[in-house]
Amino acid sequence: MFGNPSYPTYQVFLSAGFAALIAGFLMPLFIKLMRHEQIGQQIRADGPERHLIKQGTPTMGGVVILLGVMVTVVLMASWTPDLTLAVVATLATASLGLLDDIESVAHGRSLGLTPSQKMAGLIVISVSFCLAAVNWIGIPPTISFPGGLTMNLGVLTTTLTIGSKPFAIPWLYVIFVFLLMAGFSNAVNLTDGLDGLAGGCSMVVMLIMAMVAFRYNELNLAVFSAAMGGACIGFLWHNCYPASIFMGDTGSLALGAAFAALAVLTKTEVVSLVMGGLFIIEAMSVIIQVASFKLTHKRVFLMAPIHHHFEKLGWSETKVVIRFWIVSGAFAALGFAMYFQLG
Image 1 (cartoon, one colour):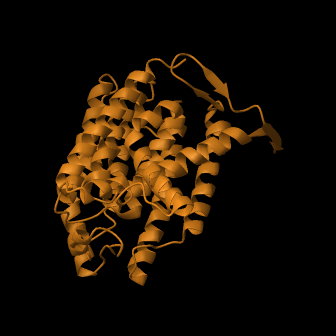
Image 2 (cartoon, rainbow, N blue to C red; image 1 turned 90 degrees about the horizontal axis):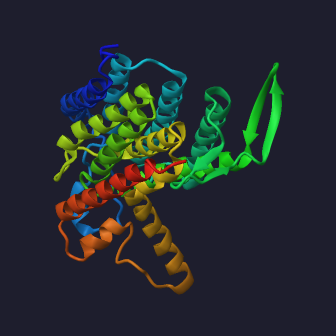
């Protein structure tokens, strides 16, 4: 481990910078490889017309983001059970996203895996993560609200005996963690519709989550989160408008899952909903649009997710992205302030 335990803040900041350099320098090689193999993004036909020129832009940049994170974590952190579980959940979700990207490229369409296939994968990953967190790490099946209120989601628990050890299945908490992890994974994925949007917003929330993990006395989780944020910075150098590469579902699903995993492991499940407020707004805009059209045959937004609505209003892509970064930063800062009010 390169970091000096006597200076943990230095270790966290160095992790962010190191991951940014790795992702930033390796990305051009990956872009060249993707172009040589003619592996490019498929653009949805019902999206904004101006996006059609992005057809064929190299994708799966999430592979390099995660490579930067993993190299940094190996060099800068100690493999505690918490860190191991967070990394496994992230890589498992990234693998699901990679399968989706490969399916999309192979069949020449904007959609890869079917929604049911994606959901099945997220169920397996999130439930496995939750049960491991409760039984291996010792995470209590509770959620804390600002102001001191704590809700026990372990009231409906089935306890099995595996070998000679008890194995708890807190049903309500399992459902909650599934909604959190699957929700953020899909929300980041929906946000990934403009050059630099998902990468920039993820950078903000991951750096804030690194501060949360640090104050929670989980230095290794702080290193992991800082590395995720730093790798997003390196990725943004090549993903800013006009993007040379997209992160694909490999990156977006993994970033959402990593954020949810960190929230569970630092017991900030509730305030993470505020920190990731921009992602939730993006997902809710799609839900509202679909529900409104099915019930009334009318659309609430000009186009969903909501970032396309503002494009339709005449905002440039870069204006939407930068303003959404600001909103994401405001939500993240508010969530971090609320963290100090947890019971």
